[in-house]
Image (tube, rainbow, N blue to C red; front, side, top):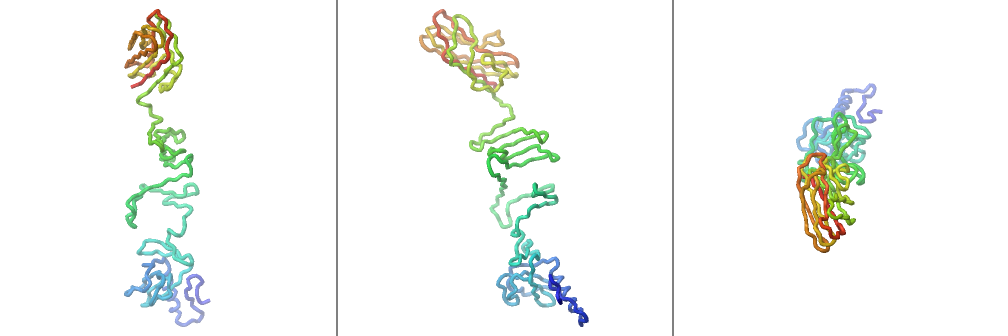
Length: 350
């Protein structure tokens, strides 16, 4: 064998004369190929005024001095051009493009076309779970001003189905503290945690309506609505606390409402409203709010006519936690009174 198997470098034969010629030729080839960096990979004709040591990857359909040298490496040394055909796996840096290319046996592939790496770590160790790992004080993502692009930048986090998660988690010492994104649904949410284990949903945006809700934030306005259509009896000249059989909404909790009496859950200002539909013969009916079982508030009275009559009352009160309010009514005449057909009650915390 008179050449090396990989780079085809000339070997010095036994008893060879002018050994320095063979030796220098091998060194020149090594000088050209080791840490290979070429000026360009698209030229098809040799530049007019090359410098000693210039290297190029010859473009397709080359001509003149480079005829038949397509995809080979052209080296200018000792005043002449030399051809070095590549072997699979050779790597070259393309100076004018700032990219790395690899000869795959047929073409020079740029780094982007080589294929997707299974893991990538930037100043960090990536693994099968965290296939991209980066350690850096700052990370910059910018719009493409080189190609150039559109001037915009959009980041996409894709999931396979609504019940899956596409989110970003913020951690302290590797323990989760906040998460935002699509967590288990298609509604955008923000969750927080004090220990990385128990999470509280702080904000949710409905994907269909855009409605924003704050599940963990107490509402500034709380509402109680209740009604009764059972036809409550009204004994003559007797005050009766109205019972509301159906509670439509109760933001105050079960301890604040038993269907008849409202117990103030916290200090504040409350708006009370009641409306009674009185069904019966001509009569007079009274309606008011009974505070703490002792005082009348928001008293109202009507003189009835035959058929259905409506009486309403309202009171805005500043109350302390633990105080009570009930709706009290009375049929003030001894004439026949069948009772109520409808009773409505509302409490609003302002």
